[in-house]
Image (cartoon, rainbow, N blue to C red; front, side):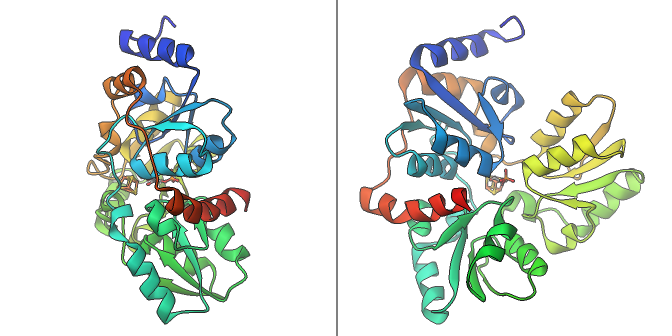
Length: 303
Ligand code: 13P
Ligand code: SF4
């Protein structure tokens, strides 16, 4: 306890008192990650939420992560600390978009990135995360796959499965999409001995220059295990900070200073404390919508 500041101690005491489980994503501020029971990528968070025994779950992340936890653990009270922490990529696809694509490609299986609303998940056959997209697309018993909303993750997955035909949507993550080939080339020039690890939400012109492509947890694993002493990190900056703190003998550099997800930064320690004190903001999902959406997430966790 002595390493925690006052607000962290108050959060941990309240967590204990209320028997809450705190799950955090790697993009929220490090001091919030430090008070979480589990820090993980989207897949690990979803899996842990499904297995949770606790009656109260606090999701330190953006809204779709809270919705996923609620869908997977419907009898639990699920809270998010920042009511306005959304994901712009999730907002780029609507249920109508999916219905339109299904009408044009009636034989295609429909896969949706977990970064989507419950209403969109309800229209899809199966969800995926960045760590499971390839495995799930490969396992699908369909030659054609509609993939929404992330065009970059879809293109990356399609490039590994030439035997399948992908139908893309036009969504993207503004934080990862902003990074260009020129940014990678400039970073490599500044750090010529560094390996490059990037997230598949990046453009193809960026992933093609990488030594490693993977989810946030997979990037962290790569950085720990590589013999390289310097690694350029092609995802949100909190990962760079976390790695530098954990592995001070190696050097980690963010590919660009623009690698920030502003929504994840809304999940501050103060917001987590308010969340536990007032038990807000609770995630609620319309029952019919939740019943329709749950199967696609359950299938993802089981696959
Ligand atoms: P992962 O943590 O699953 O790699 O996802 C990254 C992301 O952008 C979450 O919104
Ligand atoms: Fe959404 Fe991108 Fe932020 Fe992830 S990093 S939550 S995809 S905006």
